[in-house]
Length: 204
Length: 94
Image (cartoon, rainbow over all chains, first blue to last red):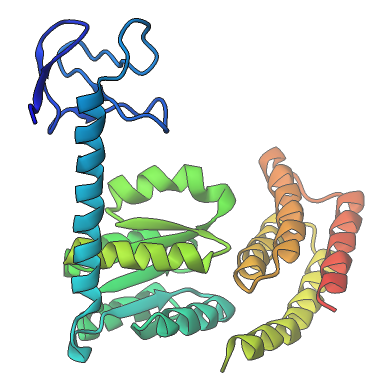
């Protein structure tokens, strides 16, 4: 199949393997021309080209298959490679439920009630993932994230915070403090599982 | 401990939390410690599967936040509304 097609708007060649996907209509699959930035989802007279759709569909399937393979590889590790998750929260109730859930997902779990205890465990045990509350006394979870990355940048950090702080902290946590992901409290365990699996895939 | 035992433990400990929260509202008019207590409760309730507790706590938390933004202490009326919120959470906990 030809993977370079002329853009219907500016006629420049568009490599559909590297072109950015158009995300203006979730149900359609189309690409954005890198030369004129035109999106063709709604443009009259430029119906979706069948071969673009097919190629993109294939690309999406390939990506999904690749992600699945990596997830299987990550979960098929031997017991000595069971990933360790450190849960940091000043609230005992959250530590207990998170410990219970993460353990049931097949991880080894460590817990800490504050950032100092967490840093001590990070240095000693080198967990694979740290789940930390954002607002804690003594040291904020985002500051902790920064310090963990200084100890070992390979440790993946997920910051947990309540809904109203999400929009305020999300960008800052991910960009300034280099958090790997973000969980909104109250924690949904489906989402927690999704995040942990995603981190396993990224680590693999 | 299984999940049901954890939930039962949460119910028992919530009674203590609510007693502490009641005395906090009755004795102090500063909104920040009260907001923090409700904030914490909002995060925990839904995590244990009790979304209604989260919703009620979140409403009280928001009330405290609004007062904090105005930079004033809680009024008598606002404290009464917070106490009503605590009562409703207590009812949800039964």
